Amino acid sequence: MSGVDRIVITGVGLTAPNGNSLAEFREALLAGRSGVRRYEIRYVGQTLAGVCDFDPYRYQDRRDVRRGTRAGSIGVYCAREALADAELDLQKFDRRRVGIYLGITEHGNVETENEIYQLKSFDYDVQYWSHHHNPRTVANSPAGEVALNLQVWGPHYTVGAACAAGNAGLIQGVQMLRLGECDVALAGGVSESIRSFGIFAGFRSQGALAHHEDPTKASRPFDRQRTGIVVAEGGCVFVLERLSDALRRGARIYGEVLSYAMNTDATDFVMPNAERQAECMRLALERAGLPPAEIDIVSTHATGTPAGDEQECQALRTVFTDCPNTWFNNTKSFIGHAMGAAGALELAGNLPSFVDGWCHPTINLDDPDPACWLPNLVANQPRRLERARFILNNSFGMLGINSVVIVGRYP
Image (tube, rainbow, N blue to C red; front, top):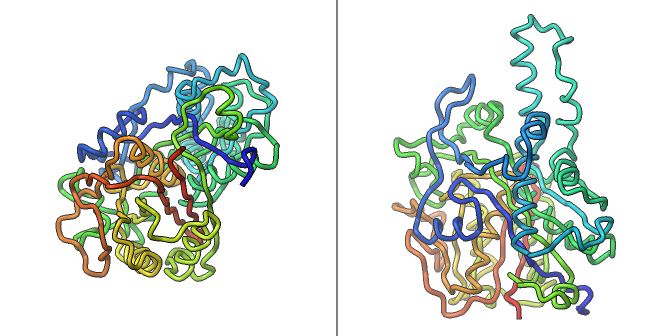
């Protein structure tokens, strides 16, 4: 791959239920600190969720927050933090060459639910329907709110890819850089899912909503006592640049995006397909020119649902056979499932391994399910690695969409 085609990560901005920067997030992951807590949502009542506590007014005024969306505020916060982390000053940059590509699971549900709830107080008289509703609910709203805040003029849009969206947003940014459509890509994923009662009600109706007397122990992928998904909000935006541009300005490089793959199960609306997931991983490995045994960390997608975890583990055992130095972990055990942000947040949480040499664990793994057995599954305590060169990040979603990203240490 030529230098102009090589894409690197030079900035990370995030908000997660257990941290509002990469440093805070990483410290929580290594310390085993969960961000899941009790949460009240209309009609559903008390449940559990991963709730972020970032300051939306750090980069927006009250008018912008009021007229915009929670997902937009998350995107603005993460993008601004990523640019600051990358030490990239837009005042000295051609703003026509900055692109914004954010993965989302869904958008508009929260805003529509809120409007209907408010309208009930006016006997459903639609003259009280907010004129902000339409711009709030168009699918490109979160990315558009970032563009408005930053005053950049390159392409912006969201990528709807269910719970594979965080990876898909990153992939889109890489592709647009390689196509020459932009010189800087702000790419990743955002989620405001906990603000929608429909998300909780839907998972509850499927019997897939997690419960536990201790909120911090509710998200337990691979554990025999797992009860389902903990819904979370959050966001992560990466600054992506061509390697040549990053080197020219002396940027710090977190890692190089070596390859990616996406495919489709075409099996079921919600049930995953281990064979297709394995094919997606193999395709990403093939494109990276890496045998499975060269991967040091596999960041698993596992959400804590019985069938979903089993299917992914079956796929992982198929791909990673005889890989003694490949370690597996899971980030949802700490924060729950951040939907459109999940893939990006989970990759970000593992990137510091290239520097500190640790693999963060899967927490709440007290009674491992034999059906989810994996060699070298890091459980409850961090693992010091003999090597940390390549990370493979899985992110899968409803309607059978699968995504895999492989990032390598640079140099």
